[in-house]
Image (tube, rainbow, N blue to C red):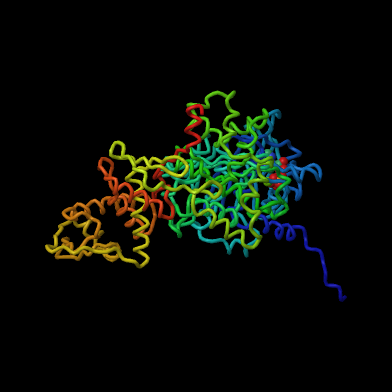
Length: 627
Ligand code: ADP
Ligand code: MG
């Protein structure tokens, strides 16, 4: 009589288990889409009604199921994706636990229609509360359709806990995007309440990203692509000026599975250091592919966390790959490949000479950099490939990722490493090469009233006068904004500036920030301002134009990016006050520009990420002349 334990009836046990897998409509969406992908479909349609609460249907043109398999698929732990224990370490499919369909059938009314290509007839199964209600042979096109109706109809407590339709729909769209992003070679569509929200034709990853995240990214993506024996990373990172105030468009996929990882996110963020404002978030879509045995897959199916065998290697690799990609975009073309030595020792660079390595290397962006962009004139045939190894001082015999690891993680203790990796990456200059220094007392040369040729300790650089000045001003304004105000020159005869109503409203909003940056401006009657003072380095007589141009530029930034108002103002002002091409500079002006540029924290790029100079190394020059 004292015994209290009893077995739960099957349907209750199933519902509890199902709750783990199917927490909300979006979880079913994820499972059904992944099943369709696993079935090799090239077209997948998702249809939902009532934010998935009344209907979630996925129709695919994949392998389909035999009659027996269709029946079996709803059994708990029934899967076609694992046969033996070793398979567990080779998982390439999205699912493998055989729980999803069983869970879905436990908490909803399900209608499965399926046909294998080689079968003449298809199968219809209707199942509810884990009980098969109907099974018959039907005519059906090749593939599978699974409709899940009235989720949690039999578990009112859970149904009542579902959020409002907009919230549940947002979750569904998120899951849809994550799957569709990872498989651009598959057509996807999403129809909600009869309206097609997404229609994604097959295409490249870039096209898919732009379709999913918006056309504003179109010309703003930098290719990330690196390969070692151990892992591959590819995808896209947004140019610095696409960084947003909200952490939205950040995607990591490991073996095509979307994951969340604060650790890897940190690796990407550190690669952007000093290129974007501190409180903004760069866009990225990155795919890491590695041997499944290197990942602990024994996490819960709905969890998006992942455990790598060696997280540090992945961190260093992700960081290096993104830095490299950004550097290519921002300081290219440059003959001086000033990146971390770690990157230069990736396999693709170090060992390009076996056939296999050569194939790897040729796929690598490093290879393309050297063969196409910069070195095209003197390395244009494969027979000359051996030369490019010489560009690196004393290549080591380590394997690619070991030396990558060494470069990033060996010298520091575990605890400090996180922070130090970040500090070490402040500058794209890298630590391995000599620090670039301008030679004093060597005259500079201005070309086309735009470029400045300046000698350095390692060769020479070609400075773009406007871009360099932009960087200098930007950092000066940043410092000013932090409390060291810009000196103001007061005008004896204050200028009045009438503005259009919209501009007037904008300027009024900016006045406090402008004051910090050296502009003393006050409202003077309706839509008219009076300029009492301007920064000491603004040429007098230009104040009115300066204000108008600044407003124009601000509006331009306003539509482009989501920086803070002050950040946008600072960027506008640095752009606007920078010397423009066409302006002839004196020896003294060039010298000051050069010195001030190299005194900045990030001399090699403008605030928006364009190069400020291109470096040419002496030994490259000698090589070009065959010396
Ligand atoms: P898992 O995906 O973990 O194997 P599921 O419960 O999601 O488990 O699916 C069970 C099995 O049903 C799968 O292993 C697969 O064989 C089959 N299956 C499910 N969905 C489809 C589909 N859309 N097309 C073909 N087969 C499917
Ligand atoms: Mg599955």
